[in-house]
Image: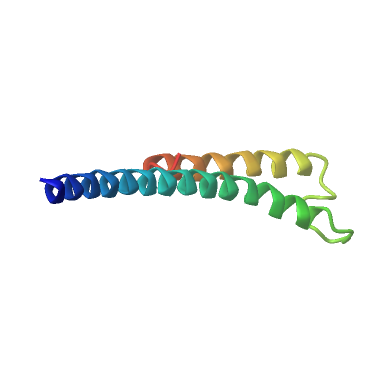
Length: 88
């Protein structure tokens, strides 16, 4: 009887550990997805933050608007892909 109870408790503990691991995996996916969403604006802002004279769209009057909208569009595309894969 004690052996059966021990096996039952082992099964319950194993099931709980599997559930915790699955939740941690989903949490890591969500954290990675947000990191990917933040990486795009960081990269583009880093490139445009450099003091070069010949950066595209800098001399154009609406260049910064185009760059800002490009960041938003790229992030929305990535967000849609991550939602489809159920990472968010």
